[in-house]
Image: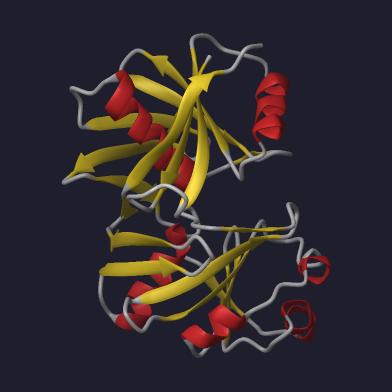
Length: 257
């Protein structure tokens, strides 16, 4: 199968977040997709299969399938719109999280993602101990969102994955704050994989409605402050969240199985 590695939420390689994109010619067993994702050893590998006027899209980490992944969706759209259907500017994906549409606009790729409004929850001793600090506010959705007072709090945060792993009601742990040269910043940690995800589109399905309400604006620029870093251009809609970013091709080749 054809295989691509794309750096997303950036316009140059070695920055943003890398995703593998496998182009399937037929359905393959879940076990094979999981083994490929493990072998690739990227945070996510996407599997794309053409079905009439839509593409099936699934995302796998090295150890499990995930319900929604932003950067691997952007990477998949980049591959489809540049190498499979370069005459098109729109692609639709049938996913575990519903139909996702991606449109190419002015060199960037705008994804229409589900709006997942997080619920504010109490700051407990258990969560504070696991985080290693007392957050200003806490919000819950698929991930746990800890709001802090400053960008410096986000930059200086050092995760203890063993402790974060006790917060097993959530897939990821996100720390976030109001930005200085953007609207808001964040970092994303996955205790199950013991890693920090460089740029996480899916977490912005909840971060955007959270910060849109706080800042009283629907058009937001976000930065994820990992070492690789990335910029996301976001807009809150009635029923969805628009997340835009650039992408750069790192490599392409063939997987032989």
